[in-house]
Length: 189
Image (cartoon, rainbow, N blue to C red; front, side):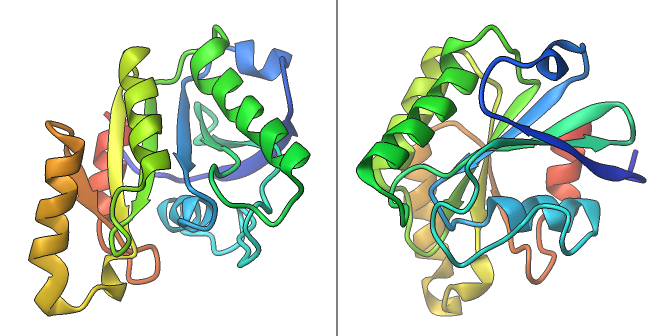
């Protein structure tokens, strides 16, 4: 199966009928500026479907993209540092946790994106723990592998694998299109 169509449907900030329409939801989560939107764009082969920005905290809503008229890719706001007020940051955090952990909405999978060069942060580790506690189907992407020196790659990936335990890690680069096929296979199965 491949992605033949991808359309932005809407951004939501709370309970919405669209989230109850029965179509599977695949959520993308990670720190601000880790490449969630770029990853979605690389999967659907559209450079500007999901808005990207160098401005941490640009994504404010839970953005839904209808794929092949049959399921949603869900671009969530990033956690961690944002260029917003503490109040706004707390509101975004609450929105993320509500959708992923507190609401009754079921995700077919949650794609957690970490920066391969930075490694697992405390925020990432907390998110993994919270998702595991809720029994979520977790896919971990080690993004921006093209930014790692070749001499450091094996060590960084090994350290990341130790940090995430049994979870499978997909090495990824939205820019170089590395890992796209493997991620597609995981989310389309």
